[in-house]
Image (cartoon, rainbow, N blue to C red; front, side, top):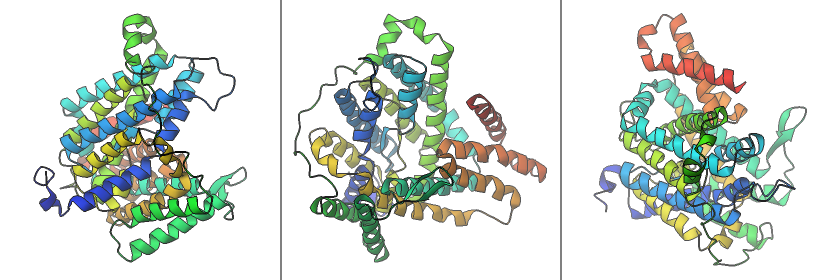
Length: 444
C-alpha cells in the first residue's frame, strides 16, 4: 500500500494521510445536508408534489457519489483530492433548470450524465489535459490565490463575520452572536495550533470547536448516533428514464444550455481546483500537473456515477486543500475521505454538529495558505499583473471560480499582444479567449 501511494517519495505516512483525509471530510461534510436540501426544494413553499427530488434518496446518492469519486481520484490519479456534488451547480440544477425552465429533475439528471460523458471523451482524447497545460504559470498561480480568497470569503460568511449589506454590499456582522463567537473561538484555536506547528492543527481546531459548541449549547446535541438508511430507489437510474421514455425532451435549446452549462462550469472549476491543490501540495512539476489526465478522468467518471445515483454534478472540492494543509499528500487521503462518506450514511445524525461555524476557521486558514502563491507572480510585468489580478479579485467578488478564470483569461491575450509578446501565447489561449467572451455574452 505504501509503495502504491508513493509514501516514501512524497514524505508522508499513514497517520498524516488519515488525518488529512478526515480533515477534508469534515470540511466538506456539509454537502451531505446542503445538497439534499437544495435538490429536494424543501425550502420552497407550496410546490406541487414531485417537482423536487426525494430528500432521503438524494442524501444517499450524495454520499455514494462522493465516495465513488474519492475512490476514483485516490486509486486512479493518486491525488489527495476529494469529490462530491458541487455547490453552485446544485443550485443551478434546482433553481434554474427545475424551477425556472420547468424541466423535470429526471431530465436535468440526464443533462448531468451527458456532460459527464462528454468530459470522458475530452479526457481520453487528451484535449482536457492539453488545455490545462497550455495555461501560463502566472495564471495558474493566480487561480490558486483567487480560490484562496474565495474560500476565505465563504468562511467569513459561514461564520457570520461578514454579512450582506444593501448600502455597501458586505459589512461586518454581529460578532456577539453565539455561532459567530464559536467560529472566532475556533479560528483563534486553529491559528494557535498552526503557529505552534502542530501537525493536523486544522483538524484539531475543527474537533475542539465542535465539542465546545455542543457543551455550551451553540450546537444542538445530535439526535442520535445511527439512523435508518433512506432508500435510493426514487433517484437511482432516473437519469436514464428520459433517454428511453421521452427522447424528444432532450432535443430542445433548454436541454442544450443545461448540458453546456454543467460542462463549462465543471471543466474550469475542476481545473482550478486541481491546479490550486496540487500547487499547495508541491505536486506541480515544470508548470504541469503530473497524471493530469488520470485526475480529470476520475472527475469525469465521478460525474457520470453521481448522475446514475441521482445527484447533480460531482466535482473536485477545493476543501481538499484543508486536508493537504493537515498533511495529506497522496491518494490514500482521498480513499480515507471516501470511506468516511460511506460510513456517514449510517451516522447521519452526528453530522448535525458539523455546522458552518465549525468549518469556517478551516476555510479561512486554508485561504491564508493558498494565497501565498501570489508571491510567485511577477507583478513588475504589467501585462501579466493585470490578468493575474483580475483572476484573483473576480473570484470572491463574483462569487465564482469560473468567473474569475474567465475574466483573467480574456485579458491575458489582450495584454500580451499589446506588449508585443504574441509568441509566448499558446494557441489554445486564443480559443479560450473566444469561448469566454461568448460565455459572458450568452450569460448576459
